[in-house]
Length: 388
Image (cartoon, rainbow, N blue to C red; front, side, top):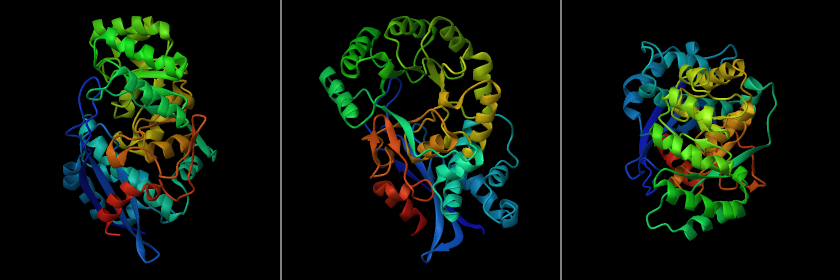
């Protein structure tokens, strides 16, 4: 068994979304196809992934370094004892001659390829990825459904308070119990009016999280924390720069409800620095690493193990992404839940076309691998890339 080719293409998101810090009008994402020599139905088994959302396509690094390293390696050096693809060995192959540090320059490119390898492997052994991950990383405890919250409340051009409330009603009607909205894109007083309007729809701060997308410097972060605390929100996400652990620790010392961060941390060491120095409270706050952007699933397993050594329960981990990949990872590792982005990010948002949300949970598919084949618009892009 061997990998015969790895292909990448960049796709624009074509989105008018805006959070507190930037819009998505120029955003692109890399789609990857890992093609193997295993044949099913007269076609090669292919693994697919994309580099989540919020970071630009990274095909240059893939084509210059990581794809050539894999294709040049002897196939038996990338396989396990059973002759199957070994994601850990493939990750090590991609990391050859890479200097320590500087993670985001390579972690997203490597992670996207590595996740596609897992998709191929799960298809080869003919099981859904979440079950394969449960066998390897969760004592075989595979979930059949996962808690899922919805990310929304963006700053749309011309949006009114009524529009925002209508959006949240649609999410609730679709089966979500926890919604998340953006803050920091307007003055605090206007954001508070938006929050009050959404609370009228969702009923309680326990049903609402907010995301500042790393917007605030110290003074404004503390001001928002003081204003938000009485609302007892489910969490206050990324209030400041993700590497400003001193400010994060200060916020944790004065803000009693949960904080959340992690989607912009790309290494196990960065996450460990967060829990060592960022004041984050194990079992109370929330960590949201995005595995395809942080070296992939193999490295994510190492991050989870590190967090458990620091006393963190898996229920406090919610992978960022809002896609089929993060859903399979949340289910396979037995994490607190996944997020969802219905109706945004073009073909890359949401889950399989037949996915059902009920009482805040999403049921999992029996499709082998990640299950992109059930997401028709996205799978068309992937299938064309692979030449299927």
